Length: 507
Image 1 (cartoon, rainbow, N blue to C red):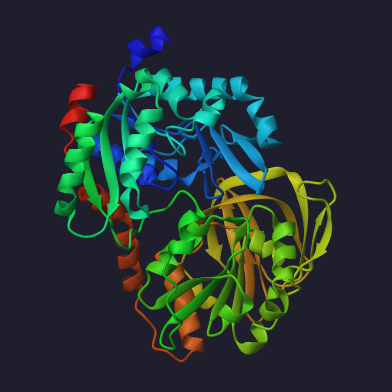
Image 2 (cartoon, rainbow, N blue to C red):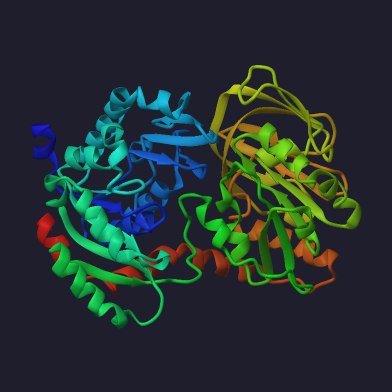
């Protein structure tokens, strides 16, 4: 430990008064601010629980929040930045990813039994970062005052102590009760923990921030901790979120006849919802997340997204009456697309002979001539693909990544993409029906490439007899999304007094 402190004594931990208060994006902003100041900085979150994951160049799986933070630091994402990733499979069971690879599947109580071994992985990952960088921005999980979990915690205070970190506490005023959040959290901390808190950030304020001046004075007098700033709520934030918690709060605009209307079917174990961020950012597109078949009315495209538990979610779709509604879509001129688990669902059947999920065999939607067998080995790889849909896509390239535990066999239909792996390997991937009205792929991020995205959207527009849109429009959308990180950082930095941070870290 002493050797570690000699290597790196500068760490800032961003902890919160609860879940979804904005820790991830606040840590992202700190990463960018430090990087702008010329500090060699890296992000770190010991344990993430999310179905929104990413695949690194090395083929390791990690949470997307730390990917965004790595980008803020100007770094290539690495699994040491998020050594443990929990992917919920049921309400009480999660797949455990350790340093990018599947380690086990455990119920919560079983998982806690492995605390000491898992924290060794956390320690080694942190030390590797500590030896390479001058600064580490640590993101916590949940509340900083989870007193019932203190003896099992491997994310918050044990990591703070490991890094000898200063702490910034983030609270969410939008949900109400911000005084109780802050004062209650600080009151529940041990004295040595509270001493590490160098500042408070009040996040998601709506309206005139000067109206909270009295609140700032009250908090500072009561807690003796400075309020670093009040961050106004920022609408239309075009940044990847950690998980799908916010989908319920996304505005669901009505479908419009002069737009490309896309319905994304909500499944219980939805994964990688960021696949649709670029689509939603297009001005001629409306993306709605739907949870009952009636909401498909008016859609031009229905997308079945990724799923952590394909069989369970297929059964859920049947129970909610989605199966017949989706099967009827192509006959009604509505395109159906499946991504990853959604691709598997579009086939004839999904089997699980090795009990990877729940065992057994379930019928798929029967819209594609494929069958899928779930297998224990997980494919995690970054890929580049050439679209094979039609001549209209000539010259376009997509980049993305695969994360799946199934092997899919195409019985009939044509491939969607020709993947380029390594210097010579070419693999046909995905399946498209001959009429083009149903297709599926394992590629996450398939809509991120602006040229492919626009040509696909224009094909839908052509079916609706709408004028086509120039590809430069989608290029501009992608550029705007790429600049969202700096816009967010500018927004945060303009409302923070960082003097206590620079002083505490001696930067």
